[in-house]
Length: 120
Image (cartoon, rainbow, N blue to C red; front, side):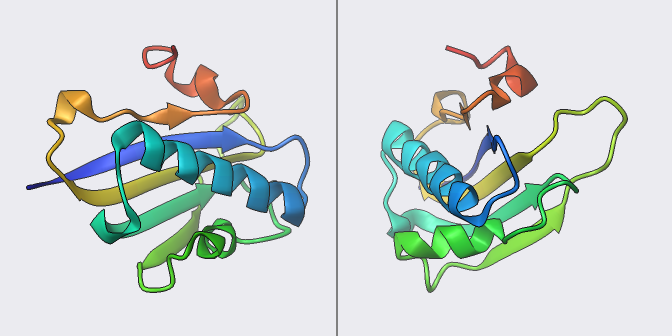
């Protein structure tokens, strides 16, 4: 079994804790499904959020998915002029039998523009 990083991002329409919870849960669910992952395969998850998202922590939303024993970390994304607003990014470190080229990185709710090379 190898250690891999699974990336993803989602975009909120507004800075709202309920929308944060829904968007992060949706993103993580899709990451798990598309990569055939279970929570037992998770090593840790790092979240970043753009500076305009201040109403809640992405990790709080992740806790709704039974991740109490998984180390989670939140950080602020770099503030780059012209960057996409209201974005939560995720990098999950996992144990998996997938090859690096088989890992599905997930971009939802308008965040697809961050990685047009991965858009489907």
